[in-house]
Image (cartoon, rainbow, N blue to C red):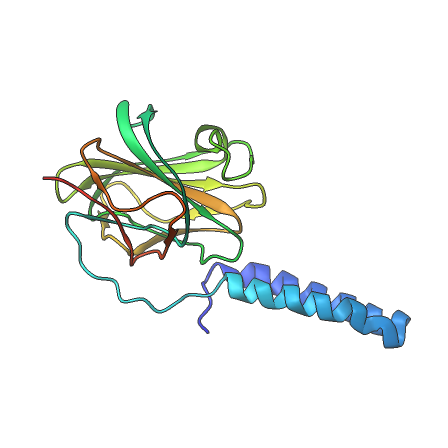
Amino acid sequence: MKLHKESKGTIIVATILFAIISFVSVHFLEMWALLIIIPLLIIFGLVFWFFRVPNRDILDHKENVIAPVDGKVVMIKEVDEDEFIKGKAIQISIFMSPLNVHICRYPVSGNVIYKKYHPGKYLVAWHEKSSTENERTTVAIDSLTHHKVVFRQIAGYVARRIVFKCNEGDIAKAGHEFGFIKFGSRMDIFLPLDTEINCKIGDKTKGGIDIIAKMIE
């Protein structure tokens, strides 16, 4: 299983803690040490599972809006996007549990024209106000269909590190990685009002693969 490069520090810390706690448990608890070691081993395994990098065949897209993350669609509604679009947009929100792959991908192809990091709170990621009050990043793309598409990585209650490696002027390719969020979090996508929506609340998405909407030229 291939692990994401963001896993290095977390896995080193987890390995050291596992080794220390296991040693202490065996030394002081003897035959009862397994009561500590087995649950720790499960948690240790979940850390590796969290940072997995699945093999996915990413296709080229023009009109299609691709799911940027693995997760569950928790919101589809018309909103006012005040940071970049400065007007009405359709917001699609996808919640990622700690068990989901947390690689963040471009939802559309085009040119990166805006990016900004916002410090903030750590409300639970499914909270509606997390989109504007939590730690987050905002990225905007001028798509190949000449639409402005905005998307946000949003830190959740247990997420404490957002990584986004894109810059204004970069070429974005739908389905390709641009960042990572450690542990539970959310991704919001803001689309033009005339976008054809191909998902519904409750749908499970596979990042880089599933088509969640289609841009109308």
